[in-house]
Image 1 (cartoon, rainbow, N blue to C red):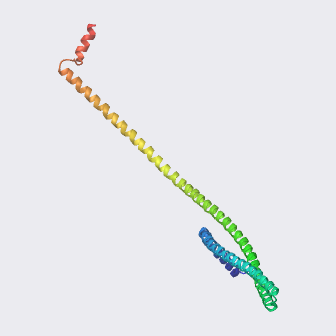
Image 2 (cartoon, rainbow, N blue to C red):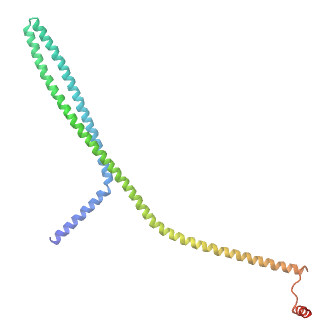
Image 3 (tube, rainbow, N blue to C red):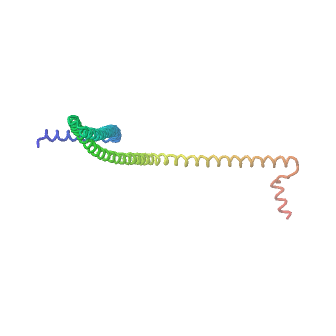
Length: 227
């Protein structure tokens, strides 16, 4: 195979893959439209069968009416023959023959309509079953697609969440350290304040003569020698 043929084959394969990708991406929409179209055709088929049934009933009624007419003219023929009117009896007999031909035609139509009706009903039933099966498969495909989208979303969210959670955890640690530092500063300030208050109180007590302060070095030495 020449290089040009190989290139052409590769390009054609790429076009086919691209076409299949577009078709697959629209598969659900295409199937839904096909199902809608099929339902429209099924309704048309049901209407056609209804028309066949109506024509069959009309033909049956005509055949029944013709059978009644045959009986009627046969009776007329017998009565005419009994009265000696041979000519009228023959006219009635010819009439019976004509009506019988019409009845046979109508009965043939009835048979044709019955056969057609049965075949159409069988085809309609099979078409409905196929359509029902297709709808069920489409429902499964839709459900599977939804589940897969959810799985993809969860997977993507999980990856993003891991990064965000790591960042959030680091921020939390920094915040906790800052809070600890702030608390230590507050406690240190409190302790310094308390020491200052104690020192002020000692000064006030000495000034009031209530509490004596420490003596001089000479006083301390005299106390030691005295002892």
